[in-house]
Amino acid sequence: MTQSSKFRSKNPTSSKRTRWKTISSRVVHRNAYYVVREDAVVKPDGTKGSYHVVERRGSVFVVAINERQEVCLIGVYKYPTRMYSLEVPAGGCDPGERPLSAAKRELKEETGFAARSWKRLGTYQVLNGFVDEMGQVFLARDLHQTGTNGQAEEGIAEVRQVALAKCLAMIRDGEITDGQSIVALTLAALEFNICV
Image (cartoon, rainbow, N blue to C red; front, top):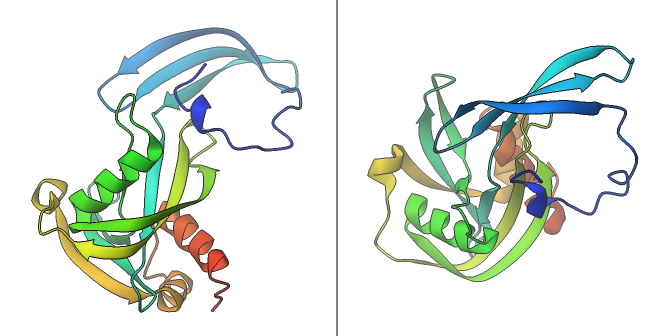
């Protein structure tokens, strides 16, 4: 069982037999954040090959929305892409941590906000071509500022309040390009029946 199996959604096609067959597996890299596994496989066309899979614990994404229907976005420079990114607060689950607990922790660490009302909006496959990680999206409401955060450690340059409808326009216009935030904001827009 992979680390993300506890996050699997109820997908009607998940019970269908896979056309891939795993012959053997070995770990080729391990660190505190992920494991890289190399599988010897039989491909759907019957030929043998190898497939590299990144195993990660589940992740959480928080759409924190205030009484004016404004979403809390963070601005952060992302090292891998060398780009500044506007995103919803997010992060990984610690070992043994429940997703809701992780969502509450990440919201406070990244924005200083806490919320009195929480709702899970959905679960999705983060990068299913090579990562087994499942992401859970939470809606946080009835926000209050705690005055404590871990923004310096996280490299967060700003926290911005943006109307949910405006967030959708920012996605359309290429101002919000983080895929996981796009999923989270889309699920929130569906929850509130908002479209651009």
